[in-house]
Image (tube, rainbow, N blue to C red; front, top):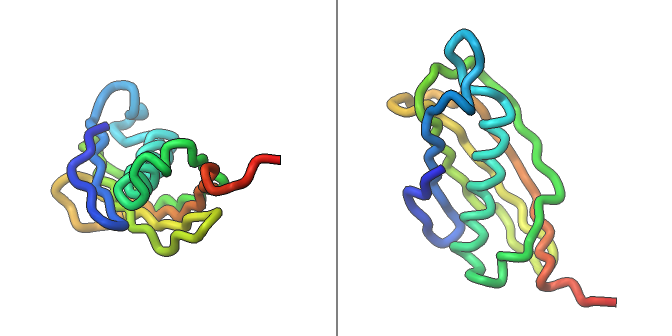
Length: 119
């Protein structure tokens, strides 16, 4: 994966097409799209929180596959919707390179571990 841009509350990540993320029939695998969605949220968190985001972990991720994507690079555009003291909530739009049509939409919650006091 390649980080294309990071800003305050946003990130754009490219997942390059490879034999490891495609299925027979020339489509991108669901697990690969799930992975790039999750990673793009993490990148957006680092853009917002810096090194404080590093120990954060995914607590929930939901993805809806909207159409069968062609065998091209996948672009994930993550946007942090809300960042609280303990949780961050984000949404991700996934596109095939060169298209403006959504191939999948994801929402995710990250637990901000560094802000949770140790017992």
